[in-house]
Image (cartoon, rainbow, N blue to C red; front, side, top):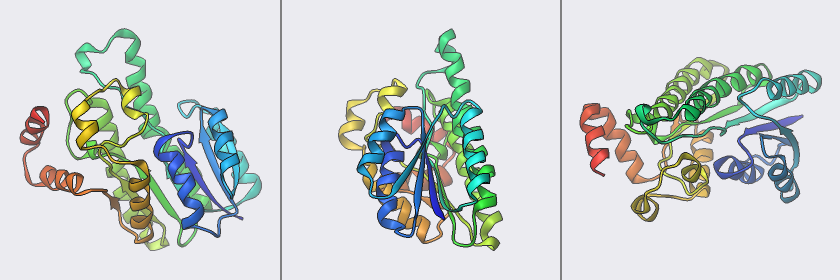
Length: 253
């Protein structure tokens, strides 16, 4: 049995991956979806032509990983694609973070870094030649970001981890792609507490475009996927300019 696994599938980029995977990989027998909001996963199941297997769970807790591990052990499927799309960000300087937000910052690290890494370790034994891993990083991974310090650092981990993993697994012909979008029109900015009308009007792109590019780049065995000229320029700038210069420019922007 050939399957794909998508975390964070209840909304945004994760949900869009489920929709597009059906068309990119028609040999899939099932798509396993993971998120906290079961009602949204059930809606997705009704929409899809492929068989969707739903796993409800909070990926900052252990139970959902036990569910996935047990199901894999029982069915021994061929995992053709793992998409780690689960994650979130919280805007605010560290000094201004209220007592109740401190745990959120730690959960951000737990989900964005530990959860993604654990899913890779769980799924790798069931992957074979030609399998793919797509990890959702961010353009925030290119450079430290004031006001998004923890989020940007967590996404830098995702980018570094993905590129190293791509190199490690190349001989097995398993390819890893880190997706580094800029602002995407999803629930992310509402949940993060960040609001910028200029950014929404001039910079934001649609999840569909980001996901299509990511799947194409994954198929072409690229270790990074960046949608749009502006974000590609941001990556180049972060490589050639000192980070303090880039950070200052970002603050003015």
